[in-house]
Image 1 (cartoon, rainbow, N blue to C red):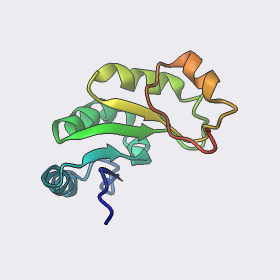
Image 2: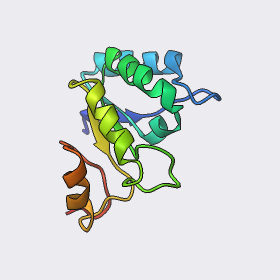
Image 3: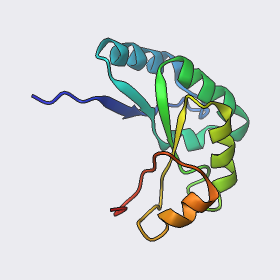
Length: 125
């Protein structure tokens, strides 16, 4: 029998803001099952001026990680590196997990720019 330790979810409104009622429901379910919560790359669609508030709201509701490309998908993760660094400064309790276009060939370069504890990529190992 599988017992997942966590789930990754992303839910936004039509205005690209957090779908708070849905996320509260997911957070309650996850808490009852002792599961960790990750907010996935839907975070990148949240307007930049709302990302700080959104990150803090997610943290208050039990999310421990945010998987992010750092900005628009049409830019590379390296073009979005400044935003990833800014997100990492908001809260020491929220893990910002850079992802999108990371491979074993460019991971070291990313880590020279930011101090990521966790990353998400393709063919990293």
